Image (cartoon, rainbow over all chains, first blue to last red; front, side, top):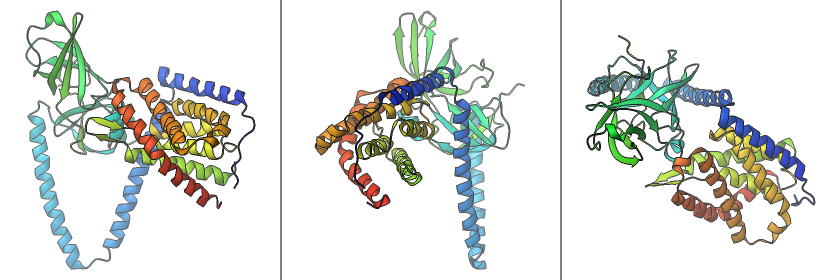
Length: 262
Length: 158
């Protein structure tokens, strides 16, 4: 095919198309107008991934049918061993979570989609977990502690907004002093920031433990969130940077909890 | 544009988007943000400007917006803008050396990444990341161009 070049490029179609694209961009940024489309995409991607996994497992099972009984007996032994190991791991996780001030009554779940590129480069820190239950509110922990909160649910897929997401806010308190603030995601991995009236601060906060205050109605009170690693004075406000205790990268096993009202 | 041509260009842009997911990565404290999807798109506008006009530019841009999870309309606008620039300078580009083309296409790919950071991820904006992306795109452009051209010739039976 010979490479042809246009003799004349009309400006108007480009101009109209650019104005249309800018209009769409404005609607998306200002009013989040296309959220349903984005949710559909999340659901479609998760469903495709689940379907692919199912197909892989089914094909493996099909070929397993041809195995000899000796091999199957060996595999049963291996599976038994794995169940024991999982049980030990589960107990360890429960103990670990208990030690982090979280009343454990959560449902186990699994991360099925986590865009780590977005997590490292950008400010959208979201992941998708699968579940059998319906949630309106709830928070998500892993074995290290609190990682995020339920943002949206489509069928059996829950979108989790991580604490470090730029759009996430969490009510926090100092574990000893009478200090309260709203922790805001910085869009950077494992870091959030909050602002406190400097007149209320009597001591150096670096190294202090910050916990959930429970005032937002989502999180239980007293869950360990992170340690203060930096403070910066901006006029009357002290901006504190908190390094989160729990990283979402350490495991794909998570637990969904709802606020304990008792 | 025929359906076959559309499908070939579409699948190559999707391939570029998948490559972006695979290659983009954190290197120590820096982040390499690649834009292969745009490099594929701009190659096609450069190679066959008569095939990709305003309609297909906005369509491919919206598809990338949908897949990449960026703000809807962002890539659509950027793809339109650069499709237009490539269209009006189509003859001039024929006179450019590979190095000049690499600087233009690598630079425009990095420009899109930079504007994306400024609009959506202001807190993650960093000169170091932008510089790394620029160097990467300029270096990768020539081999990537050869590869896409080979794929085009193969798929179009030229």
